[in-house]
Length: 154
Image (cartoon, rainbow, N blue to C red):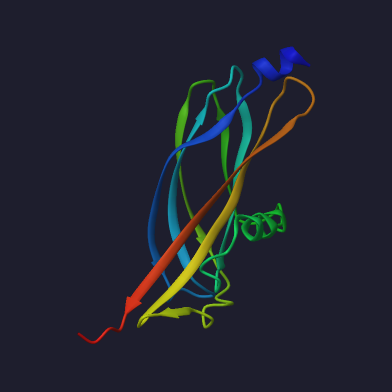
């Protein structure tokens, strides 16, 4: 088991670029994202796949536990983009978009004349190792995105 752990692939996020939040797309809000993936392991990562979802967040002060609960509820078959293989020490930029349903957008928060639409981008990167058990691996990520509109009268 030590041999497998020391020599397996380890895919992580080395950088990210989150684009603007689009609210006019159907069926709901959309955000373009570029993730820079790196395999810091000693063997290739096969069938690299990214899964992500955009969730409207009417609670601006959601706790980490609430975000983790939502994350655990994500189905494993949501939007996917594939990279055939990520070799050891190789980096790859993965460009994709996350789509939301629009549900919860009307439940925005108001504080001192500001309105904010808050979203959580939750997802994971799955990949396979051919070194033995376990074959399937995953790396998770969570980002918070806010659109703030000010209506203050000065």
